[in-house]
Amino acid sequence: MAETSVVSGSKILIVGAGIFGTSTAYHLSLSHPNPSSITLLDRNAFPPAPAANSAGPPLGASYDINKIVRADYSTPFYMDLAHEAIDAWSTNPLYQRFYHRTGWIMLDEKGSDLAERIRKNFRECGRPDPTKDMSFEDVREAWGGVLRETDMKDFGNAYWNPEAGWAEADKAVEAMLKEAVQCGVQYCQGHAVALLLHDNPKRGVRGVKLADGRTLEADKVLLATGAWTSRLMSGIEDSLSIEANDRIEQQVKAAGVCVAHYKLSKDEKEVFDKMPVIINGENGDIQPPPPSSFLKFTNGRSFTNTIMTDSKHEISVPPSYAQDVIPQALKSETVDIIEGIMPQMAGRKVAYWRLCWDSVTPTQYQLIARHPDNRLSNLYFSIGGSFHSWKFLPTIGKYISNVLSEKSNGHEKDQSWAWKDARWSLGGTRGAHEKSLPKRELRDLEDASRRSRL
Image (tube, rainbow, N blue to C red; front, side):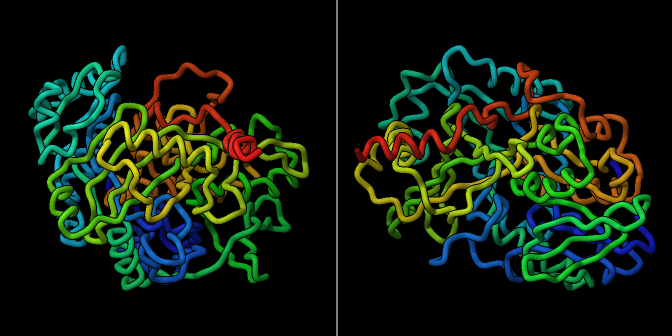
């Protein structure tokens, strides 16, 4: 296991207080000789508003009512990392109280080998295999019958893992964020709109410019900016004439999914409290209700939002409008998926909608690395969550801290998280979370909505 290495004497700016940025700030605060030299910048206020609030959730995929915590991976690398994170979730009092080991049931489509690849890794990982087959008849009768009416015709099998679960996402991030600040980390609210270069090109990045005109400077800058990374990088890539194949968009793309939330009555919550995390094949997932009593459905069919920059480069970015503005075609698709997996929800009003944006990589392995261009030698990335990285909140920061100090995390991690030669155009790579890869454009769903009103 890698130890967190101290970045002694460095003034560090972390842009983005999602799980990557918050975890890094927390782990640095435990080892840095001067935590007050670490600044964590985010658009959201401190502490961030609850994910479920009348003004809409804070920006960023990390701020949510709940997130899945599981070791069920088709790659041994991520299964091992997830086991490490789950051990932390289970034992550290800072976030243990937000972790709920409810188990999960995975319904896998006919013809898919995903469940078998996951279970093979469990058998070979050196730990007891917790998984077992469940018949569709048993699935219908379990957990108070929440899936009793589910149409199972498209599924080939189901397996149960009692060791998976979920966490109260916004509360866990807030707890870690507060701990980092209490240790001395400086929190700054602001919107980074541009990276600033030193006049001396050998000194790399000077800091960031904020939307209100302020500037923040540091010796090292870490972008934990998720889906907003390509937009932030575009200006500096233009000024340095970086070729298209060497731009950040070839490493990560912004992708979104649609999420629907239903408000439960007290009696309904008592019923749904019995349920595990439900994996609805490639269609997404359903998570048990947190104390706020919202039942959350995620439509797993992701999409990009590709635009053309002023310099004629295509990048995917979250749209400029509020994330609770959803094309009607996407709403209809999501409701159809919900009513297929839980017909008892038919006709229910959705309490609130959300477009949840993350950055995804071609292999769904994160990008945790220094920029390879010598002119940006003090610019680092911790991005590429690919809709599966939230669970690593307790542990990922120590590895990012090592990257900041140029210390190896071991050959496998260094290679897995490095700036990669792989390009999106290659395709065909089996990754860590393949169903997260976007295969459509948000504008096509918007166009479908407009056509339906004509």
